[in-house]
Structures are given as structure tokens and as C-alpha cells.
Image (tube, rainbow, N blue to C red; front, top):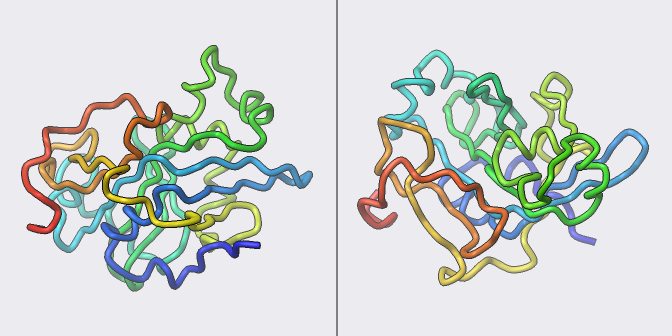
Length: 208
């Protein structure tokens, strides 16, 4: 049986960590033992030491400090009054994280629909706030928990996704740092969020 990713996995650069999470599985275990799972199909990286988004707009310095917690710790960012699920990266004291933006539902879809009724199943988890609600996550109970906690954890992908199956774009909904190619999606997957990147990819990731 595949073991959950340990907190130590998240000590490094959030950009390659985010890319490597594609195809992995987010696992939510309810109090009654029911498992709600989804394949990770969209992620973003935030790395404040070199990220203009962390000192402007909704990612200003005071709030970026919320990410300066031990690596491999769950945290939530609030955007437009909605909670967004992240995991802290880099050593403690450095503000960096991976934002999980969308998952493809696998197990427990009935429970997800109970938490977040939708007309089209595709709309259930194709956005960062949507997946939080669909999984019935309570930020007050999850924040500060290790990323391999029994109630919420990440399983690695069976194998790394090849580059031809991955799209790399700018992130969504930011002004500063909008050219950084730090959003990764599974190419052609219908559960990727419909949000448009802040602007077209400006340069290859290798130049960052």
C-alpha cells in the first residue's frame, strides 16, 4: 500500500514540488471512516523569497507570513471569503507553499455531492474553494496538521507525469508575479479549473 507523502517531502522549492504532485491523490477520511479521494489535476506554487506576488495585493507581506510554518503543514488561504487548501514548503520561517487548485473526483462522490450539490459533476471540484467544500474540510480543524494526517493526506502519483501530459502557465488571479510559470495542470483534463491565467506564459520555467 502506498504511504502518504511525509512532511519532509515539502522542505524544498515549491515549484518542482507542485509539478510532481500532478497525478497524485488527495485523500480525505471522514469521522465515520468514509474515504473521499481525488486525483490532483491542477496546482500552483508560491515562493515568497523570489515571488513578487507575496508583497502585493492579496499576497502582501503580512499574510505571506502565514506560510512561514514547518514544511509539510496544511494551511488555508482565504480569497474572496473562500478557503483555499495549501501545504507549506521550505524550512520553517520561509514563506512558501503549494496551492491545490483542482482534483478529479475518484472515491466518495456521493458524499462530495452532499457537501456541495452541483448540477454538473464536473463543477464539483474544478476550483480551489470548490474542492475544499466538496471534501467537507473545516479549516479550523485542518490548519496546522501535518500533511500526512490520517484525516487528510496526499499520496504520490503512481509515476511522474511526462511533460507532454502537463501544461505550464502563469498563475490565476494575481497582478505582481503574473508572468511566472508556476501553475501546472494535467493537459486536457475536464476537472482543471476554468479560470484563465493572469497572462500568457512569458518564459520557460528553466529561466526562473
